[in-house]
Length: 144
Image (cartoon, rainbow, N blue to C red; front, side):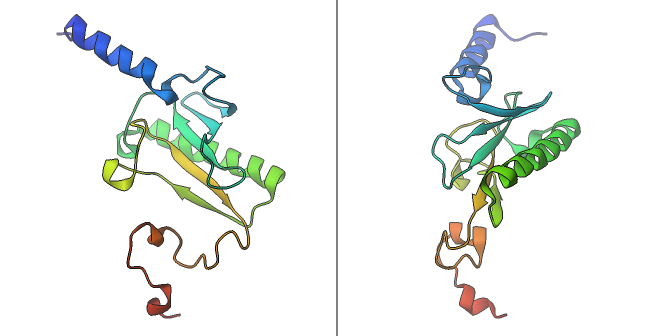
């Protein structure tokens, strides 16, 4: 049995309002790469030069809700984006992240994977990397 019409309309309306569901709207998304299931776009508020987002075309909130096929394409298109960014920006490394849930900082309820180029000296002490998203981390206390 299908959904009531009002529920279906509400879901469709939410997807139209979703930034990442408007894949081919050039005023919203500047596409860099596109696959069958995912696309790569510039981040609107980049943390570093070359910061991109890998986004599923299907409206899905959680990384854990991806199909196996989607997860495989996410991996492949992320590698393609990394090669493109390497050629253009020559970063020294990358931070790859997903804000999985509101408690983790997600503000757009559509999965997006951040691929952030990192450069020598972009922070005073990069040790610990993503551990610094929570307070109380002391890399000197970890030992060598």
